Length: 458
Image (cartoon, rainbow, N blue to C red; front, side):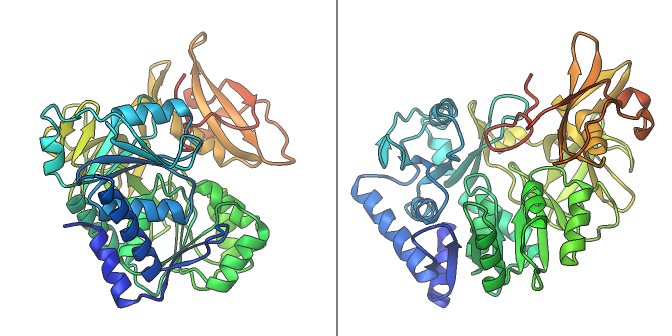
């Protein structure tokens, strides 16, 4: 099967419905008829150039209709797409080109629109195993704590992943989705999901008061998908109301309680915290809002087990590594090649995230394995400390680190406009006094990976 066929079916059943509208794109809105016609024309041009199914093509394009048409055209041609955000520096692009063994790179940069690249095999078997998977999509992890890993998804895996997410999201042609995340990083269980179900995607490449007001007032979104940073800006924007929103999903990082509170005060509804994992898909969605700090309960298609150091499941409330079983798990890691059969264990895929489940199966993330820290014999996670700091008045966000010289915690703090800087953090705010940062540094911004996640690299 080819996942593009689902979008083609929508073009046949509702050709004149708007599929995609970027309010900053001079090309204007695209109907389903126009989107599919442009994608199929691009696929024909690829075939005329000798491009074969199973090749790996990178996308290094600005957000907008060109990115979307190129991506869908690659899928229609049976090519495996490898999207890269234009915020990536050249060194990272070069790394992905090599690690993914790209046959070509599509870019609107100075290098030109289409560049043939070297294409080494990536599976140790002349790409036979790679091609047999019916590959569709490769995305590289954020590199928060180390080198990026390439994650391969086949057409069937994407189909299964979309079905698992849509059991809860229930996207229909009546939905108008305000999508405010980079397409290069959020394409499968977002862009492809919305288009395969016939919804309209609304976005704005740059944030201006007039653009956001026009988007909200003229199209009345029914679903919003964005980061905590986006919702912070939306709370401060002149958008007056969002009366038809049925889901407002926050993902990519921890949602500060202040942002949740302000959104509810402004728009009269909750933000829905979600956890998406590149290797898994959309795993959780918080619909109850009764457990602060939780990322919600699992999508019904997934089975989650919290595994202790001895490899056995731990009781409710105890911390362990998050393992996931269910449909749509990754087909392989790249560089080096590791197919799914070598990645799954007794309890499914070991995510590297440490978490706990309460008695009602609400999931609480503690942090990544590499963000565990030991201070005076106490083991905890940087994210646990940051959650406390981010909830304090006047602090927009924080980054906690271990000062190697003293063995104590330090914290970089970004203050909200007009806030007074803190000289110390009250230790009683934490479950254990050893979690209180001893050093505080005010900074204008935090160091992040190229796709926006907080960097833990020293």
